[in-house]
Image 1 (cartoon, rainbow, N blue to C red):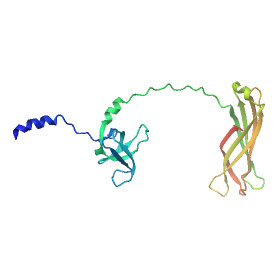
Image 2 (cartoon, rainbow, N blue to C red; image 1 turned 90 degrees about the horizontal axis):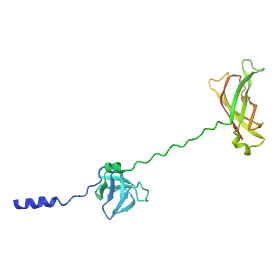
Image 3 (cartoon, rainbow, N blue to C red; image 1 turned 90 degrees about the vertical axis):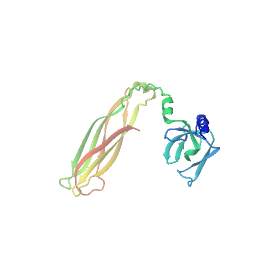
Length: 228
């Protein structure tokens, strides 16, 4: 019996068992004629597709003997869970990382900022005291001064005037309430251009809707002006 130990040991050196996919990130090769791909890590789950022998996919998750495969090249191969005993490692994750070419970074594009041609130069918010209820406001008015300065590059496309709409929102509190209410109003105007520039004012009125209680405080929450 002893004389057979040498040959057996020598024969073992000529055969290597296939390495089953073990690690996340391994590039796995299908080692069976047709492999079922399932929705979960169990043979009890439903089959979503099949992959043929020799197909190579990426291991992205592992649970016990089951691994989840992904097709990073978007070749239309079925993606899901398979038993790892039907796979062999085509390239371990460390090898994939070292062989992955580094992408050359493209130079960042340079953009020249263009100032907004529509600017709110000034805004004045005033409220008028009510003649009916003492200690409260009857209405408020927001006066907005607008400046327009359109670059000469756009001169061929300009009209003689530009329509501008301003939208403002205020919050206010009545005498009988601890909570603030809001009102949103808008107003439009036409500004005549001279060599691409113009300026003007418009007034936005707030009457607090159908509030019968005196308004004791009010403030502007937002203001935006844009061309129509």
